[in-house]
Structures are given as structure tokens and as C-alpha cells.
Length: 225
View 1 (cartoon, rainbow, N blue to C red):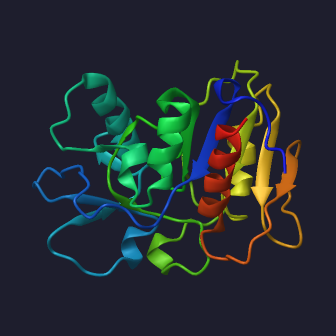
View 2 (view 1 turned 180 degrees about the vertical axis):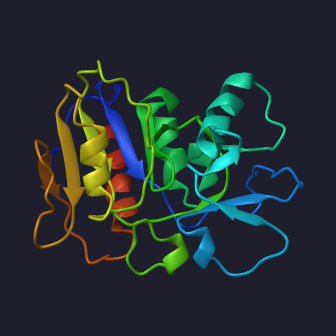
């Protein structure tokens, strides 16, 4: 299988992961309790040690948590100890992709935040598109999200995406203005719907988190070119 262009002329997008470092930084509410971002705070289990919020809920006045996160990244410093996006997740594939392609060529497709750059300081969150996740974590199509799209729309570089079928619609929506060829890898028998994207099947017996295996194979192939 031929994966595409040279590493220097390629943008890599990989979906986020449920497994995040437990000590990852969190925003603080006015009462100093840590904030955990979820899809449905009302359905979250009772917990007196934290507060639950959606990324686009109002944090104060008309300022949302998303707005605050943008300001936090622009301010410099990092008082809450937030992780760059590629360091937030436990799986080592994110770091390997960052090392190979560079932080300016790696993006994370986050169910909570949208398409974010690898170095974007990101708080702990628990939001997913997975239909098997608990209801309070699961983002639905009808939910309102003002997703980030940090990909430079002027780029004509090829873009590759590693992620499950539940993440493909968001990838397609947030990259539709990109001028470069977009390639979506998948492993199901039936290909996903990915308008205006090339589809490449990665065959593997792995069903859960198969995209990490695909990304690692991608790394090995690109390293030998």
C-alpha cells in the first residue's frame, strides 16, 4: 500500500483517545474545583470534587470555556499545567507522529474541541463519538459545538486521517476547504462515506483502536521511502 507524498509535504490528522493521562491539567472553576469537560453534564455521575461542563458552556458572563481556552493559549505561561494536545493521550503513537512529522504538521481531531494543532494546550476532557461510551461522554449529532479548525485552509499539502468511522464526518466537515488531497484510512469491509476524500483500506484483524496500528505502519513505510 502506498500512503502518499513525502513526509515534508504532508499533514497528518489522528483522532483523539479516551485514555488520557490522569494527571493532565484541568481548568479551575471560580470555587477552585477542577473542570471536567463532558458531552452531557446533567447525566454525569455526582461528584463533589469537580464540576462538569461542555466546552461551549458559559464559564462567566458571555465567555465560554472555549473562549477562555483560546485566551489561555495566547497568554503564555501555563498555570494550570495543561498538556499540548499530542501529550494528553496515553498512547505513544501521538508522540511518534509528532517526532516524525513535526508539531506543525500534526493535528488531533478531538470530539470535544474539533481540529486542534498538536501543540495546542488542552485541558482534560471526556467526550467521544463512540456509541459504546456512557451517555454523558457521548457527543451526538444534534449537540452544539463550535469546533476549532486550526488547519491552514490555504494549504495544498496532502492530508491523511487515521480514525474510526464515527470521526470521519467531522474530519470531512472541518477539512472541506483544504486544497490538498485528503486520504481517509479505514479497515471495515464497507468503506465509510467521506465526500471528496480518497479512501484507502488498511486490512487488519484488530477492531478496537486499529488506527494506531495503521499509523505505525504508515510511519514505518514513510521512514523507508
